[in-house]
Image (tube, rainbow, N blue to C red):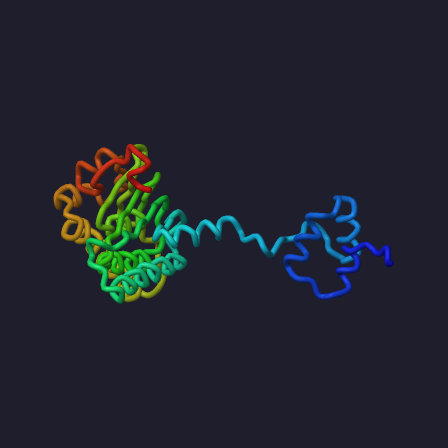
Length: 240
């Protein structure tokens, strides 16, 4: 009968993922170190059977139709628009009445970002027939705030805040015609944001015109008062 170490013998044949995990669990630390040296492995061994916890949580949240918008607004957010479209398609194909559909929940903690992506997400949210719920978990600034305002039901944590502004126009070099075109486009975008707040969100026109050109910070209480949010969350069960 051979006295060969079974862990070492296993390295001479094709082993499965489960084989590897079992061997790693069974080996004493010193023998594991010897085996790694023999295999030429430097440093820690990644365990392929165990997913990245953050990715696991991401997909679990998607199963609940929950999206966390907790980064700078960039092209990666377009993936969220795809999910919203998919959930709408699933509900339409299943013939589920709007009032019976599982809501899409969007949790915000974003400093804002890309205006073009912001406009795409807003358009998709406004077209969504499946109900959408926005929750400001701490901050919804700039594009993050405008995206939040496109959700149908909006809530805010007691100490969360918003920032509304028209953004900043960095100096653009070029010919007079190019600078003129950029300026005209910037003004169009600024007016579009104003119209969005007044016509789509229902905010007071005079209030918007007075504050939007600066850095307009809004706390939870004021957000409810001026119609940005429908309520302040005081019980975690309200957003579960």
